Length: 398
Ligand code: PMP
Image (cartoon, rainbow, N blue to C red; front, top):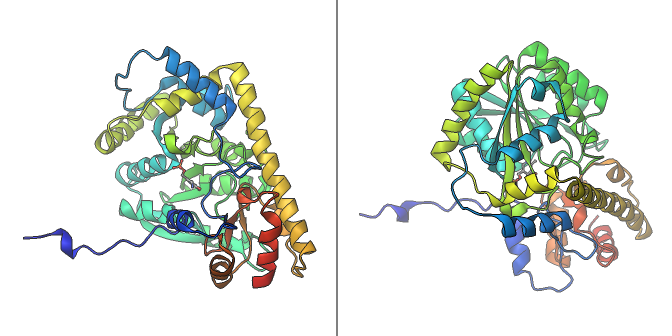
């Protein structure tokens, strides 16, 4: 008897599949605006110097490969809480937060989903439309119902605030509401501080379980500024879940460094709830890998390395902002008649360009330019060398 021959092929991941297609592309003028990785002016994804320095030190000083605990490197978890809430935040002082190092932001999301389903008996999760496609898949995997809330107004290229409020008004007590901490993927559009305050208040009044996906801290306006939304929620809500990631801001993509954090009403409840999160981890991967998290912890604990890293993070953010402006200017120079100024206002690496799926297909077929069919483009994939070609090509498919 054979079992595997009846298995149907899974659909290729819409974003990771694109990376494979790009690798196989032979036209030398090819441009990759697909997957969300940062690239510098030379089109490379370098290891930040502060990370390299910390790794070098770790390698010299490391004495054992003994297992970590289920929740990982303690110093890393503490540093993560300080990043999320700010040093000496009431939540930290009162030990209301517990953090487990996870396999990237994705791993943290999966732990959060399992936790919400099993321990809070949450049935429904509310996810923005559009969103990072894996959000839907992760919550479906744990058997939760996925509902979406409006987010993007394609006519004004801005937040569909009225639609968002109307849809989230239907979210019930105990429903999980997933929010992008900053640099909304794929639109690059974030709520304003005033809007965050309104949402935080709504969450507390309605009794939602808010889940923050915080994958781009430092990529919008700065480490502190970007935490506004999360901290607004932390002020008004006694319980929160957070899935954070250092993939982008530390350039540690393939080391898989993220964190699952839960905030409870007090330390005793936090410990009890966290023991269940640890049981979940135990059955998935037992305990995490050391290298990436130890590297982050070392950088964040060492004032010199931390200063160097924040400089490098500022550089990344500034480069993206500069390329956004250049992109809009060059499109104009190349004869685009539409108004693309909205692109300058978006946060993070992504821009929702307004390109249709057909236009994205033509860019790939005729010009070897790869983007996600939703029209999401990675601005960090633009360089002084390819921007002219890119804009000329886009104008031809408009
Ligand atoms: N959430 C969002 C919104 C993302 O864009 C990403 C990365 N593409 C992640 C989570 C997961 O990041 P990681 O690579 O750390 O798993």
